Every structure is written in structure tokens, then in C-alpha cells.
Length: 293
Figure 1 (cartoon, rainbow, N blue to C red):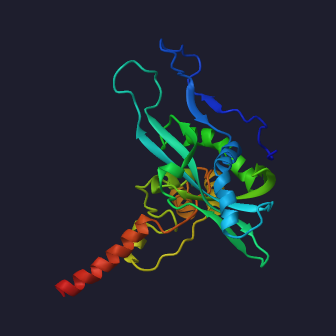
Figure 2: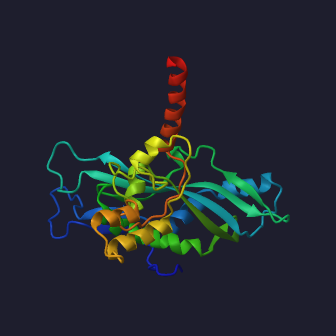
Figure 3: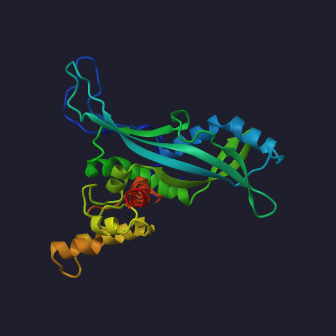
């Protein structure tokens, strides 16, 4: 059992419109989100890959009855699905946007005798929708911080609990142990700002990876480093909330560098499109200078 997580493994339906009558065609108007237990979804995905795991063990000349621990690297993704409204007809009054949280099993590896590890499975097409498993679908706008927090909160609690737990699962008739490593890389800038508690993209704090302002970024086209982190964002939110130094709004905002809501999902920092754009801008600037000069 996972710590701080309900033992129920039923698919959850979150009631967002209680009190409304069902429409004539029995459309469940009170369902605002539908999701699987995160651990149950991972078990289902691993059971689907039973043959791949056994094949991987065989191809690497490993014992077929190896019990593990197998390390599974999970890529997490979350994105808005845009407008999903019914254009005609008299459907229920639900938000017309949807958000989908999903995961992809990227690699499975197992320790070998040389204190290293052997990769027995690697996803050949990690960005394909065919290997992307949905965990949660919600009728909500991705800009709605409160709804997103309420729906994804329990999911994140399950994920945090799984980080320090081992899963025992029968694969090929033998009970094997699995550990999970989660990598939150499937988020675009808008959603990173949303789940990490940062101001929206029009903010003077232009970057989700460092504390640069627009002005600083425009004056420095070459050197970047990743300085923001989930734990620091949490500390900054606490400072923003409590204002321990009794500062004015502007001073406080400068201190927390654009953190204004509670971060609730840890994303994995990676050099994003913004920095690619800055790098490209620097390169084009040099070309223009050469051409014009």
C-alpha cells in the first residue's frame, strides 16, 4: 500500500456539477474529470509489456527468472486539448476545454554483476501517441489553477508515494520488483508556469528556468544557466504568501522573481524553446553584422 493514499483502486469520477439533472440522453453531466489510480495505470502498462520485458532479458543474455529490482523511467506529460465543445445541440454546461495528463514508459533497466545496469527495454518512438498512456482526463481550462490543483493533487500524492515504494508484480509467472523514476518533461511553457506557480507568459520574468527579466535576457544573448527549481519555487511561494520582511508588492515580487501561486507538480528543467530562440537570435545577429558591416 502507498503512504498517504487511499486503498481504493476504482476509476475516479470527480463531481463538478452536483445538483444538475441528467440530460435526456443520460449524459453524465456531473463528471468533470475521469482518471485511473496512477499505480494501477502503471501496473496495467507493465502487464501489457510483459513480452517486451521477457524478450529484453533474453536478448541481453540475462536470467529469465531475475526478480529485479527493475528501474522504470517514466516520462510524464500534461497539456490542454483545446476546444472540445459540442458545436450544436443542447449538451451540458461544462467547461469547453479539456486537459489530459499521461505518461510514457521510456526505459526499463536491471542491475548487473558489475554494479552497472543493463537496459532491457527502450521506447523506440517516445513522442508517438501510440505509447502515451492516459491517466487523467479533465474538463477544465489549463489556466484554471484551482481546478487543476484539485484534480491533479491526489495523482501527484500517488506519484510522490511511489518514488519511495517498490512495486511487486508478476511477470512471466515470477514475482518481480519495480522501482519508478519520474521525469516531468512533457509540459509546454504555459503549463510549466501553471504547475510551478509562476506568473503567466506575459510576465517580466521571461524564463521558466532562471530569474532573468526581459531586459536582462535581451542584453545577454549567450550565457544561460538553469537556476530555478521546484523546491526553491515552493520556498518563494511561502515568502510571497507570508511576506516575512513586510515589503511592498513590488519589492516582494522582485524577491520571489515571479512566483505567485503554489507550485504543485515538479517539472524537469530542460533547455526550452525560449533559449533556443535566444541562441538563434545571437547567431542571426552575428550573420547580420557580417552581411551589413
